[in-house]
Length: 242
Image (cartoon, rainbow, N blue to C red; front, side):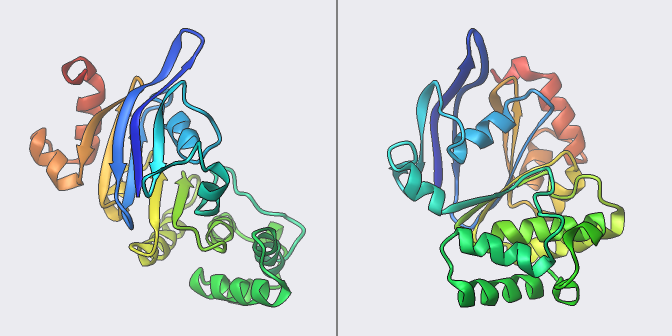
């Protein structure tokens, strides 16, 4: 579904992403991990067309997104780290607003809004202003707004940041229900979240991909008991993988 071919991004002499190649399969739930400054945010921005690479290319279904940017953007949506809602609109109004931006007429927007509210367990709050929702419900609404366009590729940037344990678990169950329906790229610092949700994991450090595989493969490969131990090992021993 997504193919990164030798992607490099430099800001002056500072190389943020360094000749990165990666394939993400259609329908895969892929987690891209890395400490702050590892290059993952820049990689995500290049993958969804918000930044151009210094060199290299990214293809979706075999077509360069930079040669077909508008077509590629129709296939994607993103739920940003900052909860992206209109606080004075109701839950239903937020969803209908985004659906109309993506070309739905009034009837289709209302239908899709109802579908998303049901899927994200927001129906009983349909008339509530977004600003009155708890943090967990606001995150659900923000993700539902990203999903209402029915993207083939969804980017989830720290979807459970700041949520309590119960709200995180509730959102996990919703995200598990989306697996296989679309290609999902997740960024998070919660490694238990990755173990629960992701089909495969990529770990970046200093702009390079230093580990790739599912959680079981990675723990076996590096003889570690947890994904956290794998993460610490491969990022601290970066020179081994360069």
